[in-house]
Length: 543
Image (cartoon, rainbow, N blue to C red):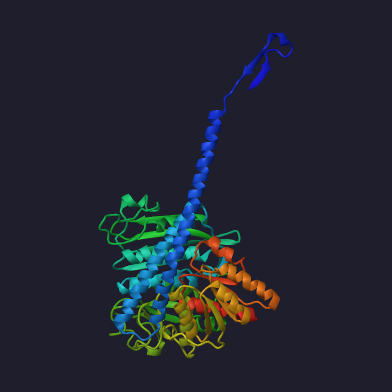
């Protein structure tokens, strides 16, 4: 209520009273506050539900993927190996769907963030597209990685998110392309302040994308083929997540496609530059400079990638794609095992080539120990560093250990220094899996079925390293770790503790590093990844 004089100088004229009723406004504010609180509560419940579902799904998935990988390292009949590889591929596909749902939830909540760390683009790219290259190879589709020589060796940024985008695009290309080729190309677009902008293109010769779908394909739950009887699966979230990640990296994703003519997805991303473009070791540069290398490969894209890389090393490339071959004398030849007639009936011009001067490009498939009619093999997709090493060895007459031999050599199960490990894990399958993996590599493993048992064992024995599951009955891994750290203050020692967790939300993983853990490994984990992390963390604590 408000009162005001008509004339402040003459009170006799009276006053004006204004009465306002704020009850409606107050009710509206209360309703808005209640709606906001309900929305926040619903968002928290949704996040908690997704986190719990992630944990519940990842725990058995860890057993499926891990035990399958462990069994694949043993002697198997061809049919058994093929069946287990299909089980492994299916489990990884399921894991990919789970990750898409979690990422989409984080995008909706505005909690998707990027890391900032150095990484080797070429190494990460080769590992990321490996499964897709194998899928394409089984269908007879050629797969080429073409990273321009001027692209820096190391970059600063989020390599996991970058590879997530590349993997999604390449997976789609491998899924839809039945014949022809897939090319993953990275070029240097521009230099920026203390950084570099890259252009990444993934093109295929698949069925293409209909015009009416292209405008909305980056929207959530939209698929190129949404009919009931569609041939290919998927959630329709992958491209939405890719577009969001690319946007966070200060770039934009685009599509160019014509039905029946394939598709090309391209995007630009900005990274801080951690190093210059790759430079050969002096011995390799001296061995390659001024030499001539013949090329006989299946596709023009593969030929262009090879020619560009060889030119950067000062090597002259001569092609032999036709039946007549090349009359020019070459110091070495790079030939594709799938090129028609190259190996079974050498084209004219290759008949007189010394077999020891041949580098044969093999498909990404094949089993260890397969007999090869050639000495020097290189698995596709080609790694530039491996190609340079092999060519330099051939041209300098040095002993050669081919990439195919290196990849087909079984990993040694035993380690030089066996470790005394404590494994705290309540899930029976994951107990057996981790114990087998670690004992197979020579470590001694003591098992604790919950956190309380782990604390009691750590009280009376000095372990080299502890692997601690986070979610366990009786006492969880976080509480057990805090208790062990308190004991160590009295004992005057520090035992490395690795968290084994099925929680995959980034904020949860980051929080673990403040709770006394030295490292963490998210489930499901690769057997090699577990072994390498144990060795690295133990070595770090001893140094």
